[in-house]
Picture (cartoon, protein in one colour):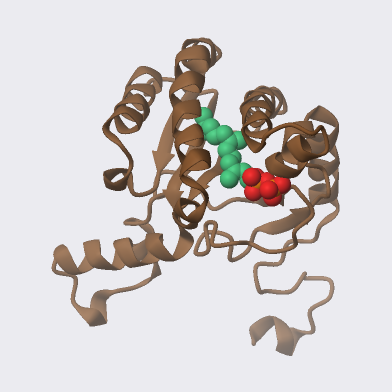
Length: 230
Ligand code: FPP
């Protein structure tokens, strides 16, 4: 969800104003995705690296979580949204942790769409914590395989993403879901996050539909018999 700061700056407003509009864009996106039949939507709300921002911005973002949860939780729950939080919850303050725990509890039974909010999350952190869990579970090195780690990753409850969207014009992954995006289709847009809405979502889905997904293999019509067996 990149571009909140620039969106606000263009309007001569403080960065926080952009984040506030970012929450509205997030709620809009959840609704449009649910409407389009998307079953899992995962957003990067706060990265392990975002602690390096000014203390004002960090505390503003933490406060915004509390406001957003109290403003939107029941509405989204009534619309069938299940909320999951992925990331290192131990390092966020008590109030934010309690708000996230509450959001997960209240929405646990919903089935229309799962919104996973990556918060204090980093793709590398995720791989390390999964490896630590495997070691703590007594998995022997020769028994460690991809499935074994996948089951211990923060997103273990969801399929790998089909489509990865980054707003705000940067063309990089920035430590989001590194393990899970191995075969995702990547889509980058200059649209700043607060402006993200139905048009941009439909454009991303249309682009995805044109992609040819091979997962490292080849399409049967392209493949020579030798290549198909390679
Ligand atoms: C990146 O834009 C955005 C963030 C670091 C924060 C995103 C958070 C929200 C939209 C609100 C989170 C709240 C809830 C309830 C999940 P940026 O600030 O890096 O923008 P810039 O690149 O234009 O400076």
